[in-house]
Length: 287
Image 1 (tube, helix red, strand yellow):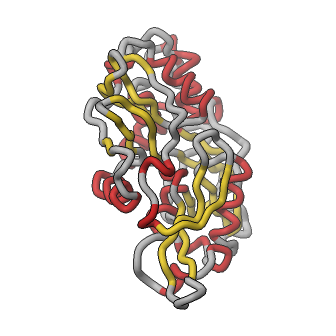
Image 2 (spheres, rainbow, N blue to C red):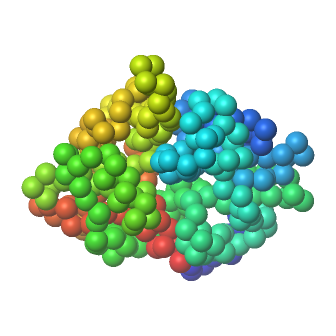
């Protein structure tokens, strides 16, 4: 980072002090409600002293709450302790640390946010969203979309099953799948589209895996309970798809992500999918 773009900028100048918290003795259902109410994808978990002890994300809920396993997975989500699904051993940074170090820490450890602590007390958080705000303000004209985008895009079509989509996400360790029709992107699926719970079938008494929550394509929240086997990518994808041309300024991609509250934008050339640019791609451009 050069001197005119914030060289030696400190974490406290970029961090967000408005952090949504929950106590470590609370339940998964409370975390999910906080995410929906506040439009966020992660919750910090703290102990009675306010010290961070973990973090839970939408991805944690998607991956850790599904599939066969221990009996606790079959409980209603308001009966499951957050400690069972949260990530522990979280990385932290201090308010006086250099921002460049936080960028490198995120990229090296593949995390989307880092809590800011002062004498073991949580005082803020630096997320990829905070960093792309910084990019938008300081790096206009620095990179074109094709310079930073990921060319190899994991795709599916509208008729692929939800099990197939989740399998792709787990195998490839990715957070989004682009849905295409004749090589043209028509939708996108992210962890926020999918959340699972085990629901007991009233006729058989057997616990079966079903969709617990689906976010509609128009951004409104809608709770449903439907069997996983009956759903396809076309049923749950965001079909109000934002796209960007490969020759656009990356600062425009950052602005789109901020305005639309999304974490990735399919990249097109003549309406054909040629890549995807994500928050992670953009913060790489800060280095």
